[in-house]
Length: 163
Image 1 (tube, helix red, strand yellow):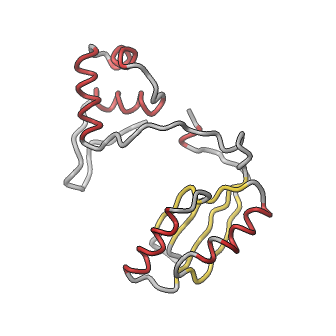
Image 2: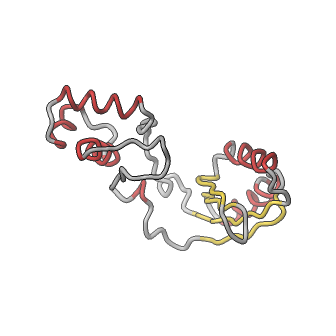
């Protein structure tokens, strides 16, 4: 994984090669011991700990979690949903965003600049479950005017599962 130290936002921090190595190693194995992390990046334990703490405190590292395999959990039906809103003023966008954040089946939600307003990634067990979800959940989200669904046939690359 490559972490860029260039950016246009003023809150971006410059990351040297050790910081980038720490982030890459943690992205591969978030449970790595500090001793093993230090060995892999070529520093001693104390400076590695200090760098890790700084990356956490600065908000570059926002947390650690277990990555679950959705296929083994029976959630192998993936649909991408284009959503068009009836209202795109700030209050409507905020209401939609807050509602989407509460729906666990929606794995990702992105505001899009284009012919529709949002693109959602939804996981379910099968088409029947998805169809019910679309009718009873997605269509009832605030300000939804219409949707279009694209069903994924195969995941060629999913970053979280690629390691």
